[in-house]
Image 1 (tube, rainbow, N blue to C red):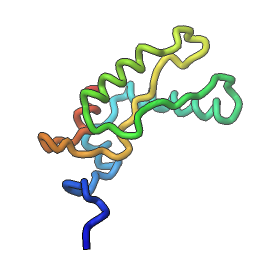
Image 2: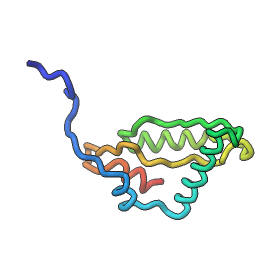
Image 3: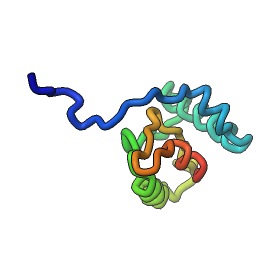
Image 4: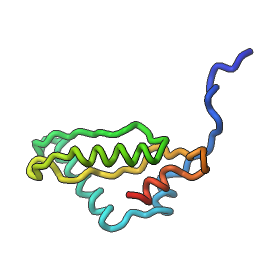
Length: 116
């Protein structure tokens, strides 16, 4: 019988738990403050206490660090110029499912996180 599933899968590995990633690469105080403020702003928008429009933009995953960096730079260049209508910042988010870079066996999340 011919294999029909996972025919393009080269390797599988257990991903690190989010708590392990945070222990390895903890956010700075400034990053923690940004995350807290962004979550509060998002909460106010969702529950109608802030009239701004919430738009969540981004790729579903990143498999190439350079492409991810280029995407982030292009997106940052499109921020709304009026600080009265925007929080003035994006919210950096760790990849939901970090993957290994198969070329050099380095965790992609680590390189992206260290470059933030």
